[in-house]
Length: 153
Image 1 (cartoon, rainbow, N blue to C red):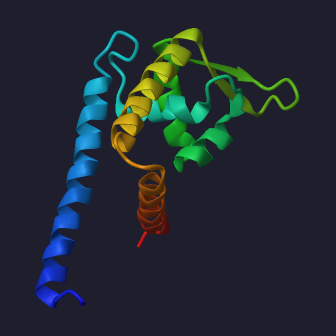
Image 2: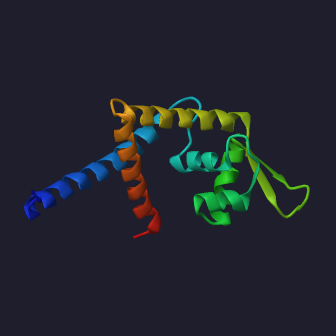
Image 3: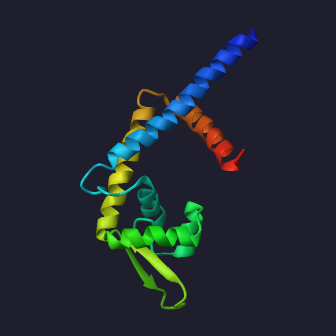
């Protein structure tokens, strides 16, 4: 039998609360996870920049700016800070001196790994106790939600 309108509305409110609450919890816990010796003093924006640079990659500023969906000016400011703190190395490309290449230092790779570990724990906790079929349903549902956010609706 189909759900009644009030039951559907109530279910939608519960889902909305779950989405909003989960998002806020992830942000809060992710911020708390930064409070360790490998990431002390870094903001979430700094960590996202480190992640976008890539673990063992050397990328141009424009590639990283595109990954983060920020302007080159915004990225330049972030990279200057991370370079000053010893997380990032910048150098001019040998092939095209106009191009600035960035990569993580050993300290930057340690921060990357520390943040990656947080995400691995989060995923393990989310999947704990779910059957493979339930994990697939969760993945499809999250892909749908991500699609909504990515579309900018």
